[in-house]
Image 1 (cartoon, one colour):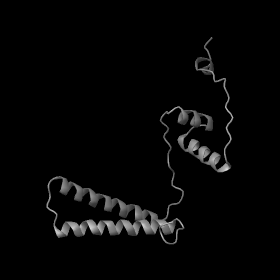
Image 2 (image 1 turned 90 degrees about the vertical axis):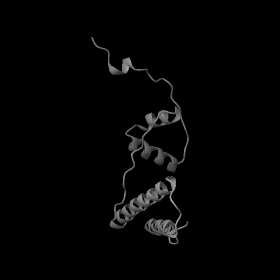
Image 3 (image 1 turned 60 degrees about the vertical axis):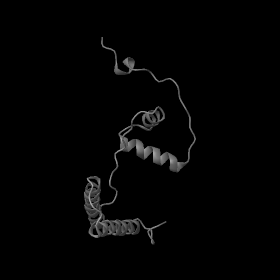
Image 4 (image 1 turned 135 degrees about the vertical axis):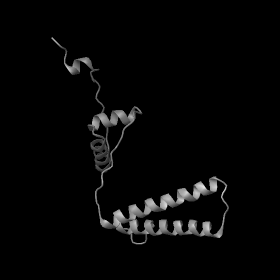
Length: 125
């Protein structure tokens, strides 16, 4: 007769009670769910330094957010091209400096827009 799966694994006999706030519990529970684990398994893995992959899920998908994500991707590509240019010994021309300032301005505008969408009126709180 084959042994059951539980008999082959190490039996967990110790129980640990932990006090936490409701908010802390909800965060841990959500992280466990996003990692595809039980709360107990998530806490054990986290405390023992095991790799826990938490899958982020999109809560709100709005056209404005999609547009900002696309723009940030383009800005990132521009910054990578500028970095590559300088890393290969490129000359710092006024045109290149203007491109850097333009990327910084676009990133600042995207940050403010995301902050507004998140409910922050001035973009810095």
